[in-house]
Amino acid sequence: MKYVEVSKKIKLGVDVSEEDLKQALVTRFRRTFAVDDLREQPGNIHLSATSGGPGRMMRHARVNLNVTFVKTKDTVRITMYGYTQVAKSLLICYSFLFFMVLLTGLLPGSVSTSEDSGPLDTLVFLIFGIFIFYDINKRLSDAQEYLKSLLDSLETEFG
Image (cartoon, rainbow, N blue to C red):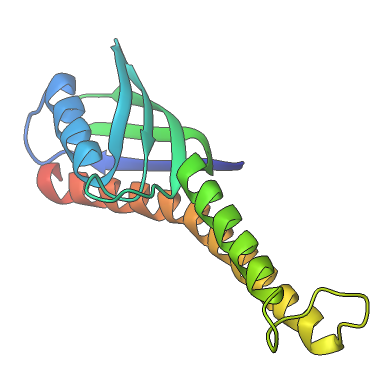
């Protein structure tokens, strides 16, 4: 699980209501994430979604966010905070791949998992584990970059 927080103060170029800002933000969320739960309240939004695109079978990260709006006459401060965690489909996929590597270790001439296995076999599992750890970390961090780009696009439209 990784904590995510993004905030931006937007100087509004046109007179726009808070509801219009919420609608524009929700539309952008739906383009970027597969939204599962969306609850709107006065001044904030609670959102549960997954990243990885709606057309893909495997999701990357589960995102739970609270979005607050503080609007004055000509500016708005949008703060998004919450957490991301690994999606179950990504965890299942990596578990399956790990067991497939173990299974290929049983074949003759490939990675050996017996007592007399050499250092090369250990290196294969180490590199595979590092790849999994790095990729999961990257998938969790991608959500924060998506949120920054959402706020930048809002600033472009309304700023």
